[in-house]
Image 1 (tube, rainbow, N blue to C red):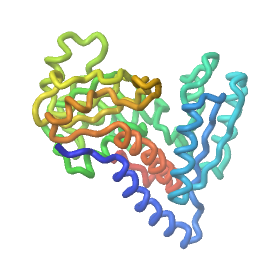
Image 2: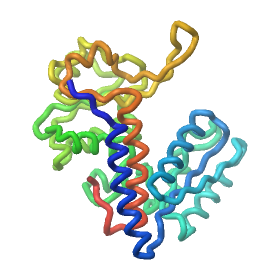
Image 3: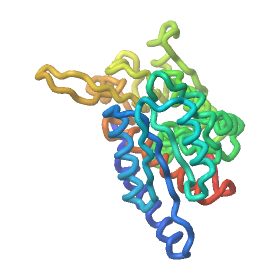
Image 4: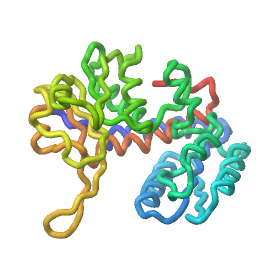
Length: 294
C-alpha cells in the first residue's frame, strides 16, 4: 500500500511556484495577487482563509483579505464583488463558503468575473471544463488530478466510482475522470444517497473517490483488492476522552490494507486543494492564453 502524500505534493508545487514567481520578479513583472472575501466569524472559515493566505506568503503571491460582518446584505456583497472584478491589481479572488443563511451563494458566484474565478465555480468555467477548453478547474478536483499525475497512477480504461454529487467536488470530479486526458479516460459512475446496492457499485471500482461528508462511511467490505482510494472527507468527530479529531469519509484502518494507493486525512486532498487555488491564481496573472485544464 502506497500513501498518497498530498502534503508532500503541495510542498513540491510550492517550490515550483516560488521558482516561477522569482523569475517574474526578476523580469520586473507584476506579482500575482489573490484576494479573499470572508463574511462573518465562523471559526472553520477563518482557519481555511488563514491557511490559504499563509500558502500565498510562502510562495510569493500577494494576498489580501476583505472581511465583512455576517449582517452584510446580498446587494452590498455583490457591490464588493464588482469592485474586485474591476480592480486591475487583483488577478483572482474567491468568496469563502459557506455564507450566512440570508446570502445566496449561487447569486454571489454568478457575480464573479469568470476570468478571476480561481475557485472554478462560475458556470462559464464549469461549462468550459465540460468542453475541455482552457478554464479554471475547481480546486479540490484539480488537486486530485495532480495527485494522480504525480504518482503516475494509470487511469485509462479503469472503472472509477465517485461517491457524492456536489457541484464543488463530485460532479466536476466525475467529468474530469471521464475526459480524454492522461488523468482521465475512465468509465465513471457517480454514486449518491439514492444509489441502490452501493457496495456492489464500489467493489467494482479500480479508483474510488469519496466525497460524501460522513466519517468512516466507506468500509473494507466496500472496496476491491488493489483499488486506488481518494478520500476527500474532512469530518470533525468526538473522541472517547471528550476531545475531537479529523477523520475522512473512509475508515482508513480497515480499508488501507486492501489498497494499492490511499490518501490520508489529514495530509491528503486538503493540502492539494489549497495549492490548486494558488496554481489557478498564477495562471490568472499570466493571462488566458496560459490557462490549461491540466
